[in-house]
Each structure stands twice: as C-alpha cells, then as structure tokens.
Length: 342
Image (cartoon, rainbow, N blue to C red):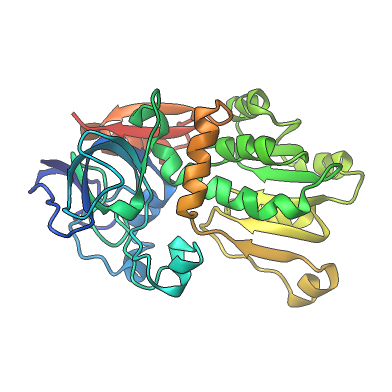
C-alpha cells in the first residue's frame, strides 16, 4: 500500500510503498482509509516537537484523523463488520484500566496513538481496534467527517467541560475560527445559550464563523481586547476557548477572561506565563484538553447526523501531502484539510 511517511524531522514527507496491516489480534480492525484529516499537530510532528514525548522511530506514517470502511476484523469483533463505514477514535485504549473504566479514554494506562507513536492514517489502510471505531449512519461520507475524529472531538470535549459555566447571560470568547474553532462554534451553539464572541485575524474565517452561529466576530487587528471588553460590559468573558495558543493569543485570552473565569487550552505552540499572584488574585482556572472520549465522538456523530455540526474542508490527494501541509502552515487553509488516498 501507499503511505506518506516522515523520514527525517524538518523535511517533507515521502510517499512510500509499505506492507498492508493485518488483523492479527482478536479485537483488531483494519480500516481502508476513505479520508484522513490534516492537523496542526502534524506540522508539530514534522518539526520534531513530539519526538521525545512520543518516542516514535522514523520513518513512520502520521495521520490521526481517520475515517473509512472496515476492511478486516479479528475473530472477537462483533460491533462492526467488513464493509461498514466508520470514523476512528484517534486513541487505542485497553478498556480495562481505571481511566478506561471511567470513560477517560485518552489517559488509558496501556494505550497507543496511531499517527503519534505508531503508524497512522496517511495511507491506504490503518490498523486500529474494535474499541476505537464508531459505525456511521447512512449519508455520512468519510471525506465529510474524517477531521471530526480529532478536530471535532477536541472541540466538543472542551465545550462540554465549559457547559457548567456557560448559562444564559454569559459570554464565551473563541480564539481562532479555523479547523478546530469552526467546529467549536457549532458545538457551543448546540450545547449552551452563551453569547459567542469569535476572534480571528482572517476575514474569511470570521465570515464563516458568523454563518455557523457566532453572535459577534472580532478581527485581530490590535483593537480586539477593547472590543471584547465592550461586548462584555467591561468584565471579560466567563470562558475563553483558545484554539490557537500562540502568536499573541494567550496574552489576549488572559486579558479577556473575567475574574473567576475559566481558560480552556486547546491550541499550543507557546507557553502560558502568568504570575501566580495573578492566578490567585483573579482566581483564573486554566484547563487543558487532550482530544476526547469515545462517548464525545459518538455524540459528535449524532450532532453531525442531525445537521447541527458540519465541516468546512479542502481536499487533497494523498500524494499532495506536502502541498497540503504547506497550505496549513501558510494559513491558506480555511476549515480543515482532508487527504484522500488514490
């Protein structure tokens, strides 16, 4: 099969011919990839930011947002069958450890992460497990939903954490209306009555945010903090959902959160530098978000089937992987990039 593989950090990926994965274990599932989402984490992987944390050996195949059709199953698999259309939860969890027992899939003590610490879905086929596949209903095509496996899953996970503080009359600032942010806006609209303020430097991204349900769109042009203060009666927002985490977003977000408010960290690339006395005196809570649970993904598929969440995408053939990554890195992608194997 063909696979786009990273051979060296800071270098383009190469299209290689490699062996197809096989369902050798009882709960193994091999998925024929119909679409694979492109994530900013893939850029960070290429830059070597994940090298020490993941411990992966090069070359390997990135790609952690995957959807397609079941190609082969192990003998104990009963929840899906060959030919079923599925979206793949990005993490392979054991189901037996304490985090798994409480539904905290991403902190499984025995898990693995295709596309991060083992071969992922920038290929014709992906090896995963029965616990990681969600069977899709009629009318959901892999290319239309693949990026929901991480971008959408991360967005809904963060939004669900914020629900308790986003009652009627509250404000939430969404920083970044790109690949994750445009999904987060729709999840906020579906789950909360809060007034949604969206910040982005891109006019097209802000226009899309308005179409998807943002109550206010604010261009990042140096006046954004004053605008948000005005929209929140000078107090700031109860919640900041930061899908960027770099290039000044963190400083803006901290300045815009209300005292006693909550800052949900999703995007990364820079560090949060806040004097501890400010954290205490303002009583700000910083909350990290690592993808989401199987239940989150299942709920997201229901919202998608109901027409409450949709993806704005640009598709590329798999052999254009480096063009797609360059477009993402250069800010030319609106919404999410999707790779389609030949």
